[in-house]
Image (cartoon, rainbow, N blue to C red; front, side, top):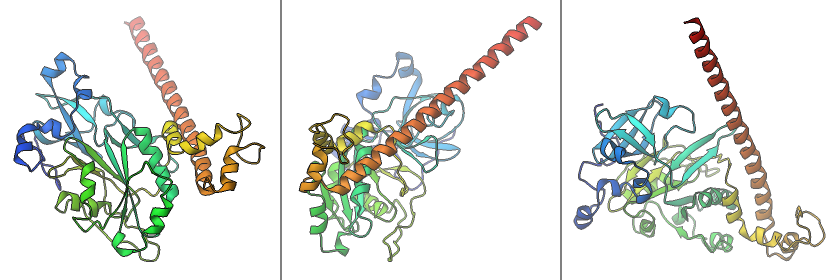
Length: 376
């Protein structure tokens, strides 16, 4: 397959590194710069080490994916048994093995982390990104700021085991920053950075999250400044930017597909389309970690099956009455718990249906083969 450079992002040439510092260029390989770790190396057999080459998925399109590795950038067609089924299709950040000669994908390596969502009305989860190390949850100092949405993102991030930071953009347009700091007082384990995404000095503290060999994801709704933030971190215009509607601070979609970009002097940065709907499924541990304070209070309730409504001896309701626990936070916890249970049940049913269908196909094929033998 002919190789083609991936548009709108720096190419990983053979023997090159995304770092601009000469000393670091000499000490880090292209694969390590892309995030290759012992976790992935240990999954390779001796035959695969000699016959295959690992590549990282940098962008996903309908008919092909763009990958990068020691041999540079190239396009790979999305077909064959490796890509059958939505759950098996590679997503941005995945590591694949390609045959050195044919450049044919052999298999996908196990993931360190995976971000997925339930789109409205869907029966299957939509993959967002894999093997992410750090996440910037991006909101803005306007009507977009929403604690319940931040908690939703946090549940997703904690389930994946990634390091998170909340970035509040457009800080230059609203001088009343105290209201946001006060609202976030209860989130002591969540770093918060207020920035003007257009100001390079303002975003400098965020470079800690895009170190060489690590992948950083930006999650947030449309119009909060994710693409502007990406361009400033990269030092060049990699992603298209657009404005917001002034009447409601809602953004316009500028990013059309998910893609990884090399950050000069740093790692890789994921830019993705804004998501107004981020349905949660299979994130029970992340949800428990996000609302650990409510779980701790629930353990003190008089009854083990307390619904935290009007039961006597309910420690959760007592905390709401005393002001220790924000009632909004309790409502959001209940809402997300119901959503996770509902979506997880849908996914389980879909998997069961897929397994049953697969068994039916195998049974039909087995009978067909048996019948053919009898005829022969």
